[in-house]
Length: 144
Image 1 (cartoon, rainbow, N blue to C red):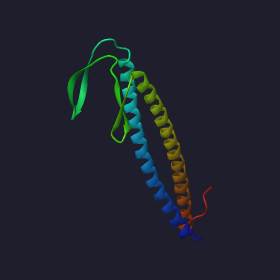
Image 2: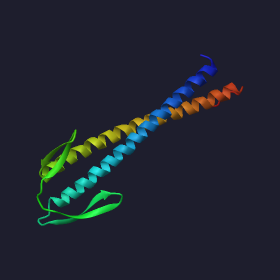
Image 3: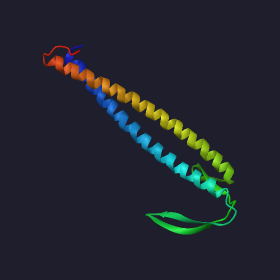
Image 4: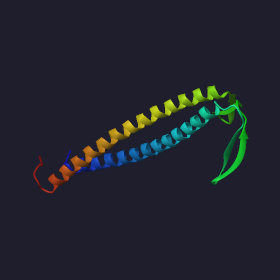
């Protein structure tokens, strides 16, 4: 393979890695947002599970607007299971489900971050090799 062909091949690989890294970064951001959402829900439910009287809360309706609402203690929680289907569970069951969901999301986030780091390392290797090849192409000697 000629020097020019090798450079061209590395540039294509580097561009592909860039696209993959952008996609992984978007997944990381989505996972982080999902994790924060579930952690907030978990904190609320842990507090809610210990109250013995009506709880006065602000209910978000969107656009930075809230309605005041009263939640009764020990109410059943509606939990989405997908496809517009909801189950009702008691607080302790929902807390267990949330903890498992958080654990799964943390694992997925860790896997994406590790993968992202491997792609970053390969990107850096390619950048270094391209620099060396460009130097050779310009007639320079190999750097040590």
